[in-house]
Image 1: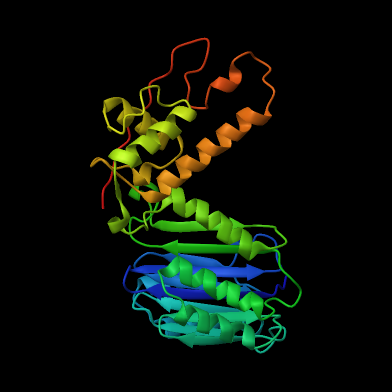
Image 2: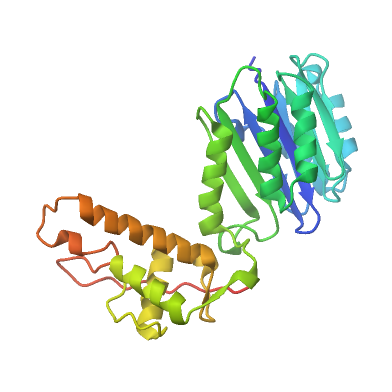
Length: 330
């Protein structure tokens, strides 16, 4: 029998039609067991002496229009070991329900609210999930920010009383995945780490930068003047651009920038209107600073090697063609 202390939150974002689960535990790779979600259907967390069938079986019931409360009832009534289980559910309409078996290890319990349920076992006390609920309700922003805030608040109140090991966040929304090819909008895990929630935040920042499109369109910068010159400079440092730093966004600048965006996995943020997201400008500036620092502290093995950025053509042959990728605007 495997028992593991865990605290989690399942939630629904009505404004963006997104369902998600965030979880932390003193258990290896908790993301492989606890979180389940399906766009347009709902989200489930199964934990304590986790019955992993609660995930797919619960989603099937939610898919059929069964409410969160009835899903909890049906799953636990048909399970002879339900006293050792813990479960949280939100359905397609944001109704929430949870269950804590009488034999879950102390402290164990749950709190439900409008569009969310928090649950945990082997915790320092009830304040862990109460703090999670308060943080979720009071944190501004969209579902990722609120779920991460809930985990952080729970950990500040002691979290899993045995310590920390792994964390995960799964959020689904229709066509939210890479290139709109799936509904897995956010799917990140930290399987083993001394500070898994902080590491989950760090991973999410990188994931958000490259994979998501959460920035306010009002912050878009025109590719003219100082912005264009800054990008030309940084692209030149990295070896993608060889033209003059004119501040004029010409074909050579566009070609260099598009290749950089493609090679650094920013396909979801490519645009065709000569405007750029501030996050990409900052990312490019960071890479250029790193490249400049590398050249100043590294002794070259090959003469002239430090004069070439990572985007420069490779020696010994022609550059292969960079595949064109579709650009999407909001």
